[in-house]
Length: 222
Image (cartoon, rainbow, N blue to C red; front, side, top):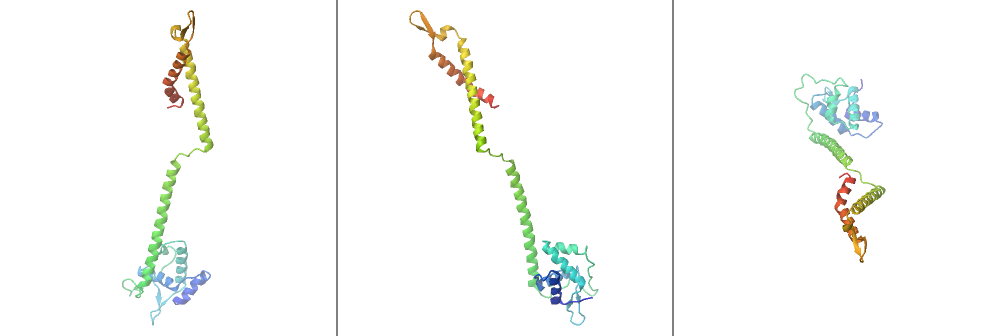
């Protein structure tokens, strides 16, 4: 069984990650947090009570490092540790939580990091929810027609309008032809009569104006 003090223990972790940079204080903070929450105990030397780390601690440290790289929070890692390791219990003469050896600055640093990760995760989730919300709204907005489609629509409208006008004009002419001669014709000279074109024009124009709106609505299904 191999045992290491914190500095050598840190070097072992670096070797496991191909000498990736990791600070000794960070590792020390991980295990202090485990002890403060009564999750895992770090062995001490009998004479000086200095902490020493073994191969189980090394496996735990590597596990924590990998989980942190996967953006796990320390709280989530603490809950999951028991599913992967047989964690070391505390000596029976230990009473209460293990102290942080007065290193409150390190504790503050750990808490600050935890809060930062938590807030970042919350912000990312909220941004994604807002994006989905607005994407759903955008999908419901009718797509604007292209210039070609707009031209085609205007052309079709012109065709419909012209068809309505032609139909109404034809109806008006037919109705005009059914009127009595006294209304359609005018006297020219003493013995000759001819169609009163002015009255014919006014009749057709009035008929078309009176019926144009309703007929156009019918054509467009309004």
